[in-house]
Length: 330
Image 1 (cartoon, one colour):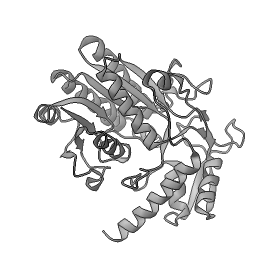
Image 2 (cartoon, helix red, strand yellow):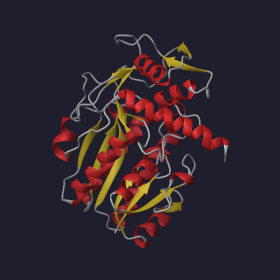
Image 3 (cartoon, helix red, strand yellow):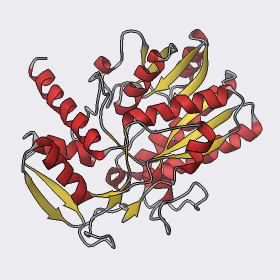
Image 4 (cartoon, one colour):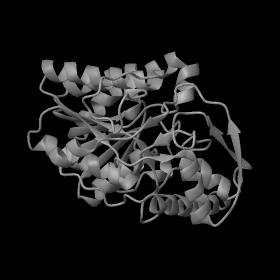
């Protein structure tokens, strides 16, 4: 049997593929390569270039490769873009996910792991925020992911499909062995942008909003190392294969850092100064959001191994330096 990883040529997906291969799984990647990279898919995995919205293709892939579990990453992830292009996000994140779920049900897939987001919480009333909090997304991105969670819940009640939805907080860092990392051009993730600025790839970094009700006025986020995140997925896969019931889990460290604190960490770890521009708030950004992680630790037995901001930044910097050299020679 094989595991299908949608979006497996992207940032988190490529780390997931490596994690599964390291564990001895047979892996099939389905990616349209719009934002992913062919080189990010290891030779040991099978790459199928195509879209999850193509139900005939998805059905054929599932049957031909004897897929028994799907880990679903494919989608659009930039919050401000979702505000300006809501219908695009509802198409790519929600409608296409519906098609994928339909194919999973039709082919008898029993295990489904979904890449959700802390954006479903919006601006929570309490931090750390638990999975019991009432969702209140502030952006079409968050709403598009919540809608997919609701579809999975309904599908699991009607069919023999069990799922886990993992609500990511802010993913950062790179593979500790240097095999892959965040490579998207024009990415908006804070740590990547700060690392690019430290290495001279950008002239400056913008801080969006300095008047939030936080200690230094900038947004606070919970940053999780991508390696710990994909390990949460393998724990979820074991859980489902052992008969675990459908559930939702936060993926974070229960520790928050402000934008200013993250930029300071990048300056410290790179030993370089760079220009920081203070700009107005962006639409869709909550002031602070930090994960309560008791549930995932207790139910899935997940224990973080890379819970250190300086380590996350150092590995992101190392990957960014590698990427610059790679791009100069290819």
